[in-house]
Every structure is written in structure tokens, then in C-alpha cells.
Image (cartoon, rainbow, N blue to C red; front, side, top):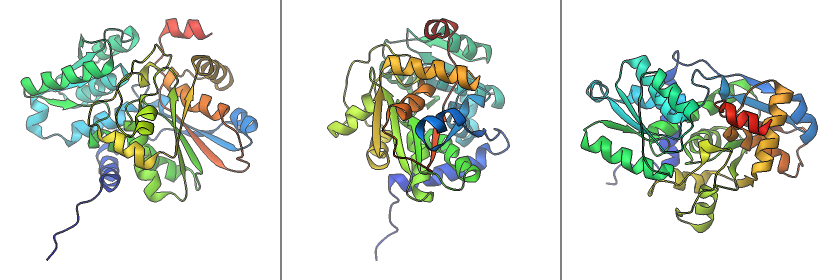
Length: 326
């Protein structure tokens, strides 16, 4: 007699998204979905903005971090947690840890934005810099967590983190009757894996578009190559998506299966998207949040009447970067 089938990875993501929704319900507010008259006119479609810049930490990352912290046992939370981050994930873990009374240590790359590291420290997180590339920081932090017997909260390579990010797609399904395409920034792939894992299972014929900077298109290059590639990332305004991918990351397989196409945009296109969005929508966004906007503007638009969602993933931009782009 055959035993029960082992669920595939996409099914596991869907289940975790639903678990995450139950865990974080009441702890995080639903973020707004607003139609953009400006982008709709340019693209000839109904363009909607999923405003994750409204999150308490200014980024979507709080969803995955909070879900993971809530999924830990009481003993694991009592031991404290370790995270690695270029900024937003560390801020999210520090926020969740403060909410739940958990000790939190965050490792960041040497070049991490002081705007983000200062915010982590204000929430009670202990910051330590290590490594040039975020993949080096992640490897060091994971080893440190094992040696100190504390839970490591990955920025993307964790089903619970992916599931938390996927709660965005649950909200989208409640906010819009039909969705034809979702544009999502891609770094390590946690956000797009969660959103696509739910959307592909529940929505009808939705296209998932992964948006990356030309200066750090690691996931797109990895999917094209059929394996995770090591490549040097150049400086980019999208610091939240920059850097390598952890070897063996489950997000690679999910992006292979679930992302319909990738689009890479230049630094000029990212800066132009940030500037025009800030001017036209009167809201701050960071470089990673401009990737979907720049990708949509760059694409060939055969989209009359279609409902297009751009995930505006965060607003944590440094004053210096803001000065430079303006």
C-alpha cells in the first residue's frame, strides 16, 4: 500500500501562506491597493500599487519576519534569534522581536545603509557588520546562530519567511476581482516566491514578472543557467535586492517554477522611476520598490483593460540617495 504523497514545494508554500495569514492576522494591518492614474495612462492598463511602504517598518519584510518569529517554539524565542540583512529584513526581525520580547542580533554587510542600521538599533536589535556581499554576511550569521544555539531567520531561504511575504497575495485577492499580472522586485526571491506561490494556485491565468537591477540580476541569471550562479554585484540604487543567493536556496526552484519572465532595468531607469513616483504620487520609495515601476514602464504594453499590480515593496531610502536622485 502506497503512503501519502509528499507535497511539492509549491504546495508547501501555499500551505505556509495560509498558516502565516492566521498567525499575523490582527498584528499587521492590510496595506492599501491604490489605482495609479498616471501609470495607467502611460501603460494603457489599470495599474494598481500595492503599498507595502505603509508597513510599520516601511517594508514588506515585516510579514515574513513576524510569521517566522510566531512559528518558533517558546524555548526558541527565549534563546533569542539571529538574522542577516542588507537592512530591511534586519529591521523587520528587530521589530517583530521587540513586539514579542525576543533578543535579536542582526548581521549586516560592511556597506549597509546607516539609515537602516540605526533604525534596527532603535528597535533594540544588536547590529554587527560582516562581509562585503550579503551572501557572505548570511553564511557567517547562519554559522554564528548554530554555534550559539539560536534560531536563524533567513531573509528569504525559509519557508516561513516566504509564507509571510505571500500574505500580500491573499490581500490582493481580497482587494481586486481580477489580476492579470503582478510585478515584483527580486533579490533572494523570498517575496516573489511567496506572492507567486499563492497567486499561481488561486488566481486565474496571472503572469508573474520578476524585476531586477541590471547591476545585480543574480536570480534571473541563475534561472537562465539552470543553477545558482556566483557573480559580482555592482553598486545599485536597489540595495535591498543586491547580492548573491545562498547555495541550495529553495527560492531558486520556486522562481524556476513560478516566475513567468524576468526584466532587468538600468540605474538610470531606477532613478527615473523613483523620481517620477515621488513627484507624481507624493510618497517616498526606495530603489527596490522602483524596480516594478521601471520594469513596467520599460515593457511593451499590449495591456488595454488589464489589471496590473506593481508591488511597492518599501520606502526606506537614505537622505543621501534621495538627494542624489532628485
